[in-house]
Amino acid sequence: MKNLTQSPAWLALQAHYDDIKDIHMKELFAEDEQRFDKFSIHANEVMLDYSKNRINQQTMPLLFDLARQSNLSKWRDELFSGVAINATEGRSVLHSALRNRSNQPVMVDGQDVMPKVRVVLDQMRQFSELVRSGKWRGYNGHRIKSIVNIGIGGSDLGPHVVCDALKPFAQHDLDAYFVSNVDASDILETLKKVDPETTLFIIASKTFTTQETMLNAFSARKWFLDQVGDEKAIAKHFVAVTTNIELATEFGINKANTFAFWDWVGGRYSLWSAIGLSIAVYLGMDHFEELLEGAEEMDQHFREAPLEENIPVVMALLGVWYDDFFAAKTHAIIPYSQYLARLPAFLQQLDMESNGKTIDRNGQRVDYSTGPVIWGQAGTNGQHAFFQLIHQGTQLIPADFLISALSHQPLSTHQRVLFSNCLAQTKALMLGKTHAEVLDEMKQQGFDDESIEKISPHKVFEGNKPTNTIIFEQLTPKSLGSILAMYEQKVFVQGVIWNINSYDQWGVEYGKVLAGKILEDLNVPGDVDGHDSSTNGLINYRKKIYFNDSNESTLD
Ligand code: G6Q
Image (cartoon, rainbow, N blue to C red; front, side):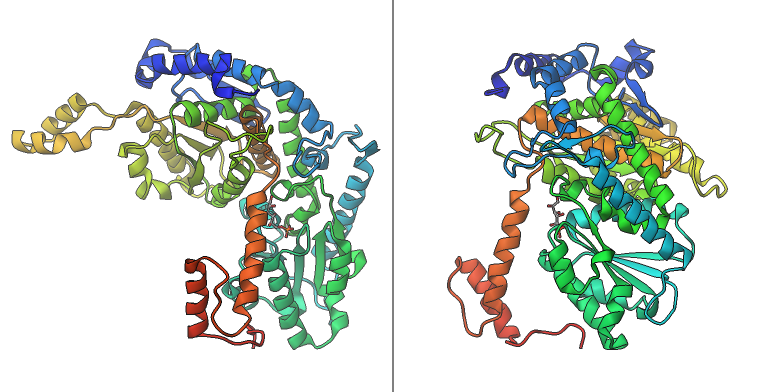
């Protein structure tokens, strides 16, 4: 689509926006008692209630027209069948093959990739079972008690969110740690908690060249060798997950302890691959496979359900509706689950790295927004902090609320209180509170007329703030797999509509290159002048405070 904003479906939505923008959702609810039934859909364990959105009966058909106009079903077929839709890197996008639990082949360049996917899954099973059963022994015969995943971005956020979310399924005598930041405090604070005799380091890096991961891996290796003193011991305590087996071997990792994946797995879509090794070890391979099954169920739903009943499609279109027509700048993710506290961070990368693009698939600059800022925090904590801005600030902030019906921790009334808070917020955001209601309330509370006049405007809530509620029975490997895949496919649909490649990340690559150049300048004595004046000034300022031309050691 050359001129998306001039296309018939877009223009129809623009006209519809003018009709609907001043309609309050509470009127829509009052007019139609069936609104919840009409605007809620299921996919296996997940239910989406999208009735609290700024939509009426005309809106969704117009949004579905936009999806059809973008050839969504053609792109969806290409995604699943291994066409190289990541055109700027010439790659297929096949994380769905990693969770393909059927016997169906998935072809890339004329070859079925499923046999090698299964080989790695078997290798992960064998290895994780050895570690978990205690048959895998450290260099001096102790069993492994701690695993430390060293990776960043896509090689960290996915396994990290899953291990945190599914803690109730973890083996009680194993701890999982994640080190990602090149700030030495990350690795050092983690190393304080573990013992070299009982620790397994998983170096997770697709390229095995990422500066932060490699520095953290070398620091961990030095810490280990300083205490153990025997290079041969590395084989028992360091394993790698990478597409670059050669570099992992150079690092000293036994080839047998290297877990492969492939260039058709994007970093932020890689938790389903061997990058999920920390998940398999911490939670067990059966749970890892249930996670894959949950994701596959969502993939099936996404492929087969009509647009009208398709959760990722509906969520994607609502996102486009707010982003491009209501000009919403941000989108909040509020999981009502402490176990899901890292979900906003995971979705920030998934969404913003995938669709944070200005150039479309034809190489043209887009004249529409391609995605909001994603942010959020677990409820109820957010309610006592930033919710004020969502309720009464000047911006429109659509939000996803996620909640399970049952908790893993049936402690007194906690889950019911959590649940009621979640629903109270979405209700309040939708309804708001009118000035007349505030006046009544204040009169009943016995305020005098002067106070009522002064204070009442501050107590008015406009309401009409859109939310999705995503509800599932319980947070299990399966339901989590479905939820994460749901968001992945939502991001895909939006990329199709915005006509951008959601699977490259040149912005990330650019930062990696520049950091390398600045590091070179920090390593030489004297002032530098080869950058802009700000960058020169900051480099020279740091060198005046501290310069050491030998390698600064963080571990001495
Ligand atoms: C993800 C990005 C990025 C990447 C990290 C780590 O899609 O490409 O977050 O995952 O930069 O890269 P490595 O796995 O190669 O270390």
